[in-house]
Image (cartoon, rainbow, N blue to C red):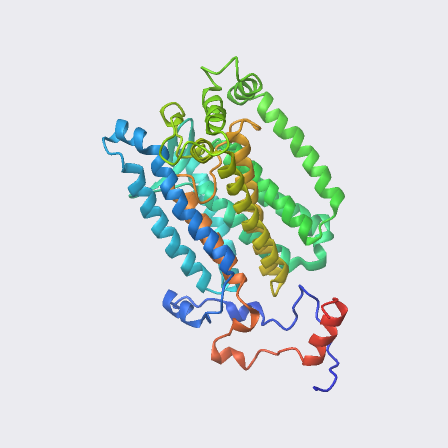
Length: 429
């Protein structure tokens, strides 16, 4: 047995033996191939990977089922949306594989470029460069590609918060250092989302921020106080905005507004009700004739009609498993940065899925949030795939995370006695 070590017991998250961040700094000339080569292919979480791949494939099928009639009427091609979603799915799978192969700690040097890039894209959408979809300017035309900056912002905020919170350690309890700066930065991004307007994405950004600060150890009174203030602010934004208040009143009285502002949520609820227990069968739903944009934010309504209550129950269980696996990965992450990153991504999937399903069932007023991995659209699918790839990379066993040979000699590993002592203290034995 190894001789006793004078090293202090290792904290579960603090990981003092981890190599310093500069070891993972990307060199300007370093190619993607070099980064992939340096990553040792340890096994990822097989359950999470299999579920997400299956969900993406299922999403392609359901997009086709929900959009064939609309595609025929608008484009004279029943497979118009199917072809595009299939391309998005292929790109998403490649992105997921690439991001799962690159060590997540190499994201650190790119944290602020990602944050400023996201802020720049959001700013461009509100100063006149945005492309209008519905009644909002939420898209940027980048040549043949349309990008929705709000989708990128959600992952960008998680990456920045994980980096910032992991650096602050105990200072997170300070209002001026650990709380206010995060609130201000994300608040600016939230205001840019509101300007589009995209109320749902702004709420998601703030929810992610408060959740991660709570997990990091920020003082609960600060969090509760600002949640209360922002709750009043959200009520004011709804009450004193004509279209938001009208949408709220229509939601509160759907029967009386079924042919007007509440037409879409009313048809969505009808779709769920038509499915019964077992559903009508894939491709046999009739609400696609009446539910506008059924393949986007309301695709869960078509799933409810065609696969019934059992199908929706299974879908909820799938998202619950995704979140649970993500939380498990966060708990087992080798450092605070990976833990916050994994928890933030898991929270992002959970809150978006829950909100989308609640909106489709008219439990909440209509919000423009996609159903992860299922709704039609490239921005949401590719960004979510990148997020899953990061999550899968964090799930790789620690012993499989080899550093480049030139850096391994500088890494000080913990002694066996320190590991045994830590395991005993944590109750592992």
